[in-house]
Image (cartoon, rainbow, N blue to C red):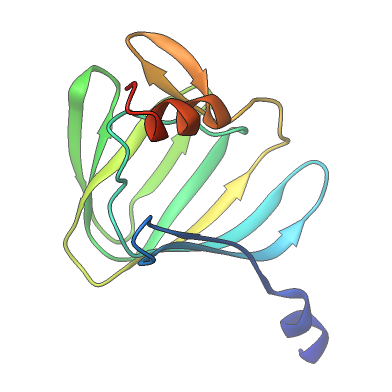
Length: 138
Protein backbone atom coordinates (compact mmCIF):
# COMPACT_ATOMS: atom_id res chain seq x y z
CA UNK A 1 0.00 0.00 0.00
CA UNK A 2 2.85 2.43 0.78
CA UNK A 3 4.22 1.99 -2.76
CA UNK A 4 0.81 2.83 -4.22
CA UNK A 5 0.47 5.94 -2.07
CA UNK A 6 3.90 7.14 -3.15
CA UNK A 7 2.84 6.87 -6.80
CA UNK A 8 -0.09 9.26 -6.26
CA UNK A 9 1.10 12.83 -6.75
CA UNK A 10 -0.14 16.30 -7.49
CA UNK A 11 0.35 16.65 -11.25
CA UNK A 12 -1.21 20.04 -11.92
CA UNK A 13 -2.57 22.99 -10.02
CA UNK A 14 -4.32 26.00 -11.53
CA UNK A 15 -4.96 29.25 -9.68
CA UNK A 16 -7.02 32.22 -10.83
CA UNK A 17 -5.30 35.49 -11.67
CA UNK A 18 -6.23 36.54 -8.13
CA UNK A 19 -4.43 33.55 -6.60
CA UNK A 20 -7.52 31.51 -5.74
CA UNK A 21 -7.16 27.74 -6.10
CA UNK A 22 -9.22 26.66 -9.09
CA UNK A 23 -8.18 23.09 -9.92
CA UNK A 24 -5.93 20.22 -8.81
CA UNK A 25 -5.08 17.05 -10.73
CA UNK A 26 -3.73 14.08 -8.77
CA UNK A 27 -2.16 11.31 -10.86
CA UNK A 28 -3.05 7.72 -9.99
CA UNK A 29 -1.69 6.06 -13.16
CA UNK A 30 0.03 7.61 -16.16
CA UNK A 31 0.90 5.43 -19.15
CA UNK A 32 1.39 6.28 -22.83
CA UNK A 33 -2.02 4.72 -23.69
CA UNK A 34 -4.16 6.04 -20.85
CA UNK A 35 -4.04 7.89 -17.54
CA UNK A 36 -6.18 7.90 -14.42
CA UNK A 37 -6.48 11.04 -12.31
CA UNK A 38 -8.49 12.44 -9.44
CA UNK A 39 -9.62 16.01 -10.17
CA UNK A 40 -10.53 18.53 -7.50
CA UNK A 41 -12.36 21.52 -8.99
CA UNK A 42 -12.96 24.48 -6.68
CA UNK A 43 -14.15 27.23 -9.05
CA UNK A 44 -16.23 27.48 -12.21
CA UNK A 45 -14.33 28.13 -15.44
CA UNK A 46 -13.51 31.81 -15.73
CA UNK A 47 -12.92 31.88 -19.49
CA UNK A 48 -15.72 33.18 -21.67
CA UNK A 49 -15.33 30.39 -24.23
CA UNK A 50 -15.75 26.63 -24.16
CA UNK A 51 -12.57 24.50 -24.14
CA UNK A 52 -11.65 21.02 -25.35
CA UNK A 53 -9.16 18.41 -24.07
CA UNK A 54 -6.14 16.76 -25.70
CA UNK A 55 -7.59 13.25 -25.30
CA UNK A 56 -10.88 11.37 -25.26
CA UNK A 57 -12.00 10.98 -21.66
CA UNK A 58 -14.39 9.54 -19.13
CA UNK A 59 -15.19 11.54 -16.02
CA UNK A 60 -17.06 9.98 -13.09
CA UNK A 61 -18.36 12.50 -10.55
CA UNK A 62 -17.53 11.30 -7.03
CA UNK A 63 -18.60 14.44 -5.16
CA UNK A 64 -20.16 17.79 -5.95
CA UNK A 65 -22.90 19.35 -8.01
CA UNK A 66 -22.31 21.72 -10.92
CA UNK A 67 -23.69 23.08 -14.17
CA UNK A 68 -21.83 22.30 -17.35
CA UNK A 69 -22.28 24.08 -20.66
CA UNK A 70 -21.59 22.16 -23.86
CA UNK A 71 -21.84 23.06 -27.51
CA UNK A 72 -25.05 24.71 -28.76
CA UNK A 73 -25.41 26.38 -25.31
CA UNK A 74 -26.71 23.15 -23.78
CA UNK A 75 -26.71 23.40 -19.96
CA UNK A 76 -26.90 20.38 -17.67
CA UNK A 77 -26.89 20.07 -13.89
CA UNK A 78 -24.36 17.34 -13.05
CA UNK A 79 -24.83 15.34 -9.84
CA UNK A 80 -22.63 12.80 -8.03
CA UNK A 81 -22.68 9.41 -9.76
CA UNK A 82 -22.88 10.90 -13.26
CA UNK A 83 -20.50 9.49 -15.88
CA UNK A 84 -19.44 11.82 -18.69
CA UNK A 85 -17.78 10.39 -21.81
CA UNK A 86 -16.42 12.82 -24.39
CA UNK A 87 -14.27 12.99 -27.48
CA UNK A 88 -11.21 15.25 -27.42
CA UNK A 89 -12.75 17.71 -29.87
CA UNK A 90 -15.91 18.23 -27.79
CA UNK A 91 -16.09 21.66 -26.13
CA UNK A 92 -17.46 22.41 -22.67
CA UNK A 93 -17.04 24.46 -19.51
CA UNK A 94 -18.25 24.48 -15.92
CA UNK A 95 -20.47 27.53 -15.42
CA UNK A 96 -21.58 27.11 -11.77
CA UNK A 97 -20.55 25.02 -8.77
CA UNK A 98 -23.07 24.41 -5.99
CA UNK A 99 -20.78 22.65 -3.49
CA UNK A 100 -17.43 23.60 -1.98
CA UNK A 101 -15.66 21.47 -4.59
CA UNK A 102 -16.14 18.83 -7.26
CA UNK A 103 -14.20 15.57 -7.13
CA UNK A 104 -14.03 13.37 -10.22
CA UNK A 105 -12.29 10.20 -11.29
CA UNK A 106 -10.92 11.23 -14.68
CA UNK A 107 -9.70 8.63 -17.19
CA UNK A 108 -8.03 9.74 -20.40
CA UNK A 109 -7.01 7.99 -23.57
CA UNK A 110 -3.83 8.66 -25.49
CA UNK A 111 -3.04 12.34 -26.06
CA UNK A 112 -3.52 13.36 -29.70
CA UNK A 113 -4.91 16.87 -29.69
CA UNK A 114 -4.01 20.33 -28.41
CA UNK A 115 -5.92 22.07 -25.62
CA UNK A 116 -7.88 24.95 -26.98
CA UNK A 117 -11.02 27.01 -27.15
CA UNK A 118 -13.89 27.50 -29.56
CA UNK A 119 -13.96 31.18 -30.51
CA UNK A 120 -16.55 32.21 -33.11
CA UNK A 121 -16.71 28.66 -34.45
CA UNK A 122 -12.93 28.32 -34.80
CA UNK A 123 -10.30 26.51 -32.76
CA UNK A 124 -7.81 28.72 -30.89
CA UNK A 125 -4.94 26.94 -29.12
CA UNK A 126 -4.63 27.54 -25.38
CA UNK A 127 -1.36 29.51 -25.61
CA UNK A 128 -2.72 31.86 -28.28
CA UNK A 129 -5.99 32.16 -26.32
CA UNK A 130 -4.13 33.30 -23.19
CA UNK A 131 -2.22 35.93 -25.19
CA UNK A 132 -5.43 37.23 -26.80
CA UNK A 133 -7.21 37.21 -23.44
CA UNK A 134 -4.41 39.13 -21.72
CA UNK A 135 -4.44 41.69 -24.56
CA UNK A 136 -8.26 42.07 -24.19
CA UNK A 137 -8.78 40.88 -27.78
CA UNK A 138 -11.42 38.28 -26.99
